Image 1 (cartoon, one colour):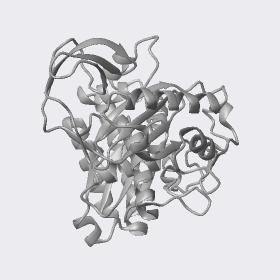
Image 2 (spheres, one colour):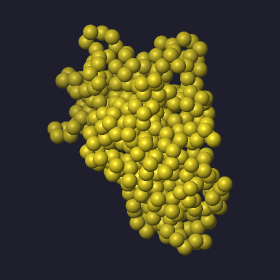
Image 3 (tube, rainbow, N blue to C red):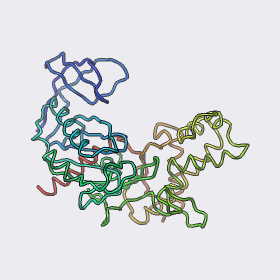
Image 4 (cartoon, helix red, strand yellow):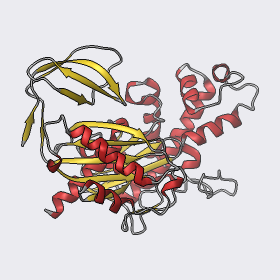
Length: 384
């Protein structure tokens, strides 16, 4: 089934969250809420070639700050999406009811009915018990501890719900319609405050018997007695070396040297807190210390990926998260990626190095809810 979008011109009539409400002035006379993003008022033309394919799948991506929800069609195209504040200290029942209201608002102008939504997917931070559908004790969601989130969401939405770790959901999004869609298997690694990831093999997410599969940030890359301590309390983990938090810590230590980079010192100033973005900016401007720190991060990440290559031998590695040093469109991002590849190739068997595929992610912040919807679609297709 394809739902045809009329050939219309739309005018911006106001903003709702990260969406824009449009008055249709062409072949239809109604309000449409669409997930296009503009920095200023302009007209939009939509051609009759644009269409969505039923059934739809609902995706929910729970974060410590926002809950992102979206409707995705059977081919992975986003029909509509929005977000709302998480309120992490409050009962998750409130967020679940809010998600239902947002879905109702999204589907109303889409040309579909709620009955066209076959299933829903949910991604949350861990720790979790995926098999029981329970979110356990996430540090950034104190009000959600030991909550049967999968069952509650299924009850409220009236749809079967597939539950996943948020990083695993994002990985599946990239596997389905992002940077990994040409491959039968992939590992996604996300660099941010921590290091996360997901492992997808033949349309299945590797969650593990104890819901702790794909804890990529906790691969041990340093066994020395003085290895850095990870946020989890253990020593030598990848996250303690290659996360944005670790980069800031290593930079702060290096800044104790009076000869440390002047560009970086100028960016920090006297009151601005040091951040990974500042380090990246300084490196982009040629600061020697910042460039060294970024290169060291690439080496640490390469060591972790080499272990994964030997253990899993996936068809591709996809690098996502907020700390991508500008990604594929930035000379610094390209340099960083090439340095990661060089370290991986130095450490792995020759055939793995020759066939290494390592690219940046493509979906950005949409990967979570798209992947959650994709996991729901995969489960739906297996059980039909």
